[in-house]
Length: 226
Image (cartoon, rainbow, N blue to C red; front, side, top):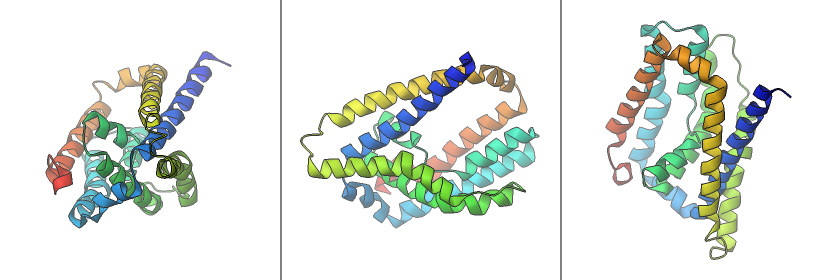
């Protein structure tokens, strides 16, 4: 086994531990009612769907039309703008000390919509590409849905007994995330250096800033109160 293979394995394992650990901790921290409650806000749901599945993809396509990018970067950006409901959302909400139930509820909704959205939209944006909805659903279920449901079930049957489990799992998933970021950075350092100062770096900046602006304009400072 080469060093690169070893580091790649560590990155993959830590990434899996991060996702599963954070999803399990989320399930142990909330109830089903708390997760569903934010989704009863029709305006919030519509704006979230509009932002993630209409405006952000349009932003990505606009960047590709304006900025000349290598084919690999174009493909990467297109895939990025068509997939929503990433597990990082939970950590971002926790770091911002936001409404966890709102973040998890939106993540669930975006994850479910992504299963049907990607197979329909991605082949339209990338010619010759076919997407297996079943494979997407299986992957998301195994790494995100099942751990959350398991956590919810355990909490429902023993709320007092698992009081300290969620903080512990959050710490473990946080360490796993850090390891994943460091190892991934090490594996891709040359590509990152090459990206700096290129059109790809400009496209990345525009995408991040544009996405933040879309979220801020539609969601405001307190989307839970919308």
